[in-house]
Length: 125
Picture (cartoon, helix red, strand yellow):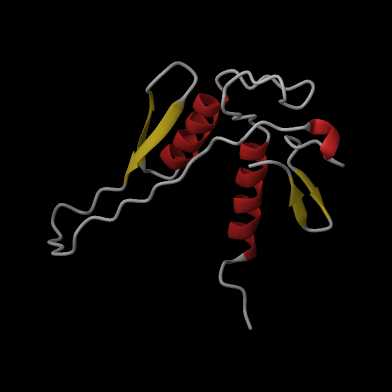
């Protein structure tokens, strides 16, 4: 069986996953249970900005909106070619970027470290 994605795409996906894990997007923001040394204030907005930057670099229109300070969401739109008529309805993909509070003592590794060990990415997210 051959891999579904080329190795370069897998490596890029792993890099993005690790970067997102390193952004402590704990909800509620600033929760005291967040791992020591990590400030989660505005973490959801930071994660949304990261997603928007990655999408923008790929040519996808993206913006970050905050319903409340620090609780940002990334809205992206992949526009179809205007010259192409597509009778199919649009598709909406939805995901969350926040995580529940962390008890750092319960982890053997930094939950926001995004460490890659023996082919496994460790972290909260």
